[in-house]
Image (cartoon, rainbow, N blue to C red; front, top):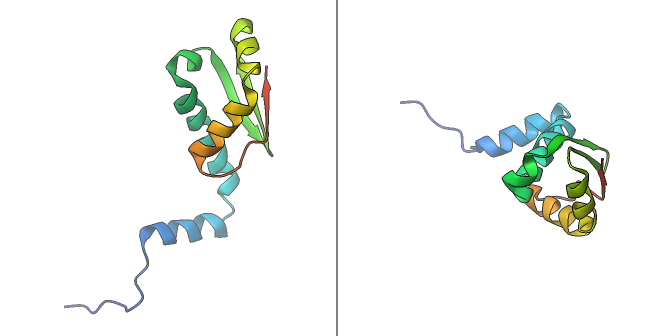
Length: 98
């Protein structure tokens, strides 16, 4: 029977070390914010969403409906707050609806 090391690390810690050592945080943040957009705003708004991209601290969202774009523009601050809560960190400080 093999002996185990006294220092056992969890898979979570190993993945965090791997991500930080290879500088993969930005790419993962871009993916997680896209998923958060679809989770927070729901399927109805996702149908009209054509593109979601994160550049620095600004989230650019392209919508195919000008009416929906206007309605969402009234609640930008709340949307930013909900998205940041969904991903668990402050990634977005500005929201640009196109």
